[in-house]
Length: 491
Image 1 (cartoon, helix red, strand yellow):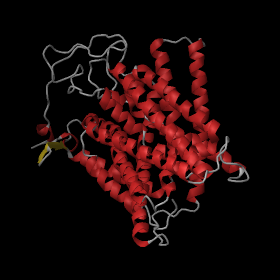
Image 2 (cartoon, one colour):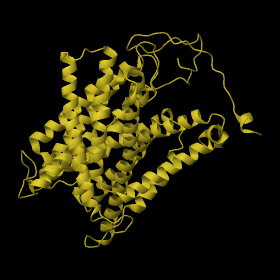
Image 3 (tube, rainbow, N blue to C red):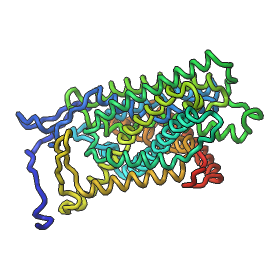
């Protein structure tokens, strides 16, 4: 049978989109048709709770582990001020971005962040947005692979100490654990699309709260029960803890780590596209954003401040590793296992948009090619009928393998997180949301609102550039002493 004969074309009743006001949800659909939405696609079923779970899964990630270290670099005053500022800016610009899901004139949906930029701004900005967004999504996959391997390694190391004594050398490479994680993600990545992973986000969100609570509790116990650690209003001190150059670069990387902790705007539109049309998607997304960002901000401030109080200016890059690997080893193991489970789900939140973009682009480019478009159906006991195609299976497998190999080459936790945060924060969290808002609302140039947006954007650009410079400097320094794929590699 030829490729042309194998293609199945499904006729969908024509749907006329009526102009809707900004904030409107469901456009006119054919009377009595309950299986499709106003765009002819299968009806979306997401709610404020599923969206909140996706947000918490995306926001409370490995970034929370580095906040005690970040505050140690900046100190009590600048650290708390910076973390609070990132929270407020993210919340505000996310509400602007949520309004960009539908075109105000036609009610047309934006399925991705790129679509929102295309519908509201157009031109070269669409390409810039796409390159920035997908580069960061891929980078976040690499960062989560590194973070998961560190937690896997910590579990093994604690058990080694518990079994063989504290004097035994229990060092090991993270490479094997990255491979384990990669194999796991190869299987999970075959979940067809974002709409099918709501349950995974619920589990991941629960895990993120769990290890945050454990880390917070251990920090409080260390603060109450141990000798007070040395802290200061300005953080690590020049001449005592670090040199002047190290202080500056450390502050820059700390800003990048904080920016990464709030870098979920790149998947906001994709999350919003899972919501049902009634009530209006933008209103539901704003509620989910307020709940998600407020919840994570409380945890971030708690974990960052209490973690800094517990460890002082010597706070480790991953504050869960600072409690040692001895006792209570079982509680620290539980926290690290929660991190592993959470990042398994978070990896999917950030990679499903990449999968969707590549697969839809390939299907559009080669609509008659059976390798790309022909669905293969199989029955999986306990799961029911499962559909896939050869291109999806091959591409997603190769993607996971590549991100795993890159993570093995540059496993520098704090520096990689800082670079990812620097790349994503200004363009995706600040610039495009404010530009789209001004375009939609026809904000006059040099008006008070226009000037306030320009000041906000310029200030965040300076922060992103500084964070990127600090993280690149850190990665270059690390690469001088690290040997990729060696069992005694740097970490």
